[in-house]
Length: 179
Ligand code: IMP
Ligand code: MG
Image (tube, rainbow, N blue to C red; front, side, top):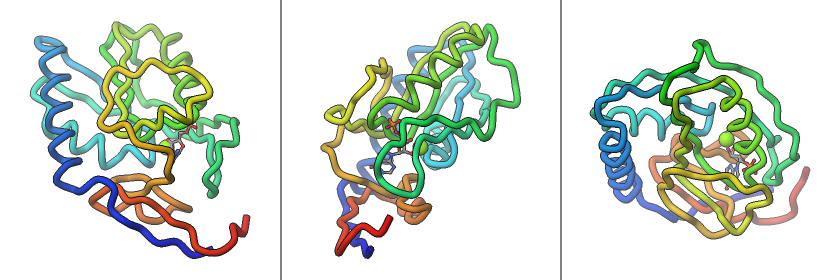
C-alpha cells in the first residue's frame, strides 16, 4: 500500500502550542518538581520540546507500552516492553503521550501508575481524537483535538516511518491495505 502525507498542523503551530502547555504546567506546579514519563516511541519529540520549555525542576523516565501493531487499528492488547527505571512513589508525575485514540492504552497505564502511589498523576497528550474514544480517560493537558484521521510526524509513525517529520501530517492511503 502506498501513502501520501499532507500537512495538518504546521511545525510553527505545534511548537507554539507546546510552549503554551509548558508555561501552563510550570505555573500549576510552581515550587514543586515533576517526573515526565515519556511513552516510547511516539512521545519522544513532544517530551523533549515540552521539557526544554518548562521552568520547574524536571526529571525524565521512559516507558514502552503498545496496543498497536504496524497497522492503524487498536488490537486492544496492551503490552509493556520497557518499564520505568525509578520509583514514582510520592512524586508529581505527568504521563506524556503522543495521541489518545480509543483510550485503551492510557486507561490501562494510568491505573497501573496510580497503584504505585505518586503524589499526583496527570496526563498530557499532544493530540486527541475524541470521536474515537472507547474507554474514558481524563486528560489534563491537550495540545490539539483532531478529527478522526490517521496522522504521522512529531514522533507519530505509520509502520515506524515518518516519526521525524517536524509537523503533524495526515496519511492518505492509495490502493488496497495489504495487512
Ligand atoms: P489507543 O490505545 O487506541 O488510545 O491508542 C493510542 C496509541 O495508538 C498511540 O499512542 C499511538 O501509538 C497509536 N495511534 C493512534 N492513532 C494514531 C494515529 O493517527 N497515528 C499514529 N499512531 C496512532
Ligand atoms: Mg504511542
